[in-house]
Amino acid sequence: MPKVASWEQKERFIELRAKGTPFEAIANEIGISKPTLLEWAKEFKIEIANSKAFEIEALQERFFMSWKKRTELLNNQLEQINQELEKRDLSEVATEKLVDMQLKLLEKLKQEQIDIMFKQEQERDEIFNEMLLGKEVTMWKPE
Image (cartoon, rainbow, N blue to C red; front, side, top):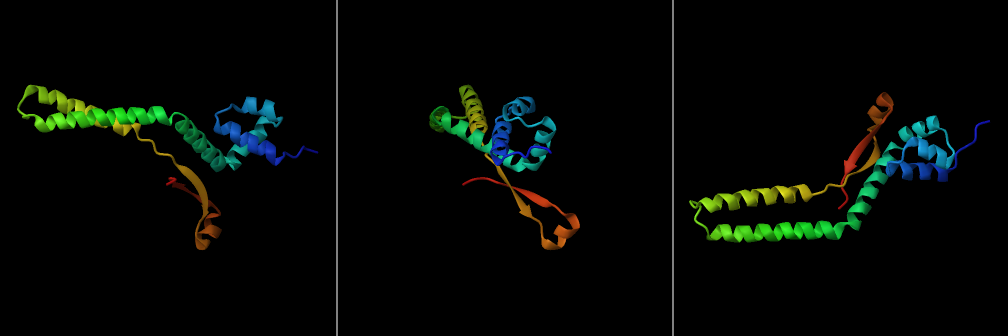
């Protein structure tokens, strides 16, 4: 008779997959076969995706100060350039360089933006539910 997996093993599996741990290592740690783990990966794909989002969010919080400092520095530089551009006659050659710097800084600030997405299952309309026998996954951003 096959051994029934505990909920603790499933939770540990979700946690390890969210961290990117290979199936082989998970199988060795929690004592569950790889084929079972592959089935769990399908069964808990939304939980794993959400756990990954939480992992990323935790990492971002850990390094928030450096991200915040980088963003503040870029904003300060952009503000200085904007102030200088307001004083300049745009026919000057050096102005082109300032405009170029302005665009590059705006692009860097755009790259610093991070979107965190979570997923959840949602039942389809009852009419379509019988016909399609499925669930719909929706994406949402925390506020």
